[in-house]
Image (tube, rainbow, N blue to C red; front, side, top):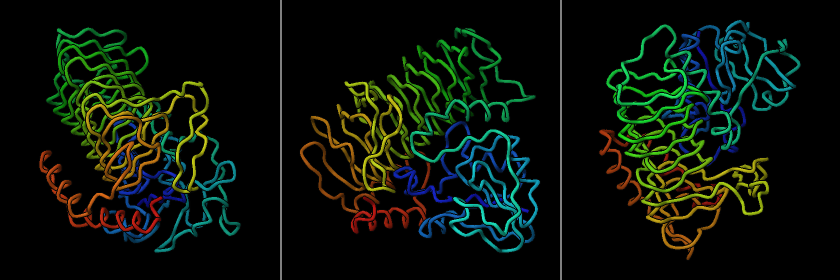
Length: 399
């Protein structure tokens, strides 16, 4: 038995974050969505995603019954149990949409079956709570729920590493959890709003102010004097400083200097230059709109607070300013004075005064140098993904 996590029609709606990964590879809390499904189910997990991503993220070939699940769904316990109870030929549904299918052999549901449960499947109504990540802003909106579920899964029945007495805890100290090798010194940790999780080998430097729920992933760092308002989640190997409010950084990215990041989501291998700031509130206090790749135009978010969305390998120069609801593609370089456009394509090089195309070979070389700094290598499948995204942008499909 195994689980296939399907993009289920959500992939285009989650760009630019999903240019380089399946939907279930997003990390809204401590864990990637896929990691949560694997740990909670005990089953092998694979993906059904875009063709150009399938070499790096293949669909498993397990024999026997399988479960195909909407990869945008947070694997809460009741939902996981309902999926694992499905029999071949059954569909788990809620509010007229399919959540999961029981499969036999190598069959796969039709693309339209996610929006409209097929009549030939026996429909099993799910009465429990569903939390899904189907738009980029959902990652910071539902970050607190994801952290709470992951924190319970990973820490229940375990004992935290000791917290230095030089720290001040406001709230329940039991909601501060340090994994092996984690360091936290001379900081203030407030757990009244939720837990604070510090991963293996991670470091909270002196003078940090944290209001949970907050995640600092394995081997990540909070720089001295950082001010972080939860819910916020920073994945492995991130470097974070300055002021951050209700934001998600998927991993391996740097916001190491002063500057504000609020109600935002950054991908992996991004770097925000010193004093980069984003606006998360319009002067009119009106609804923030964000460019949708799926619809080719700006769409309403229903949010008053909404900041920046940035794809993998993108960077900003010092003193860069991003407007409310900005969307930056993959491997873009943004710099210069003034506000750049809200919509910045992948492999764009420039700022408010205009953009040129970032040469793909230079972009690949830069990515390789960046990964070495974290003892990583750019694999052939990962390089092929970047080249495909470049081709999409050159052909207009990335817009």
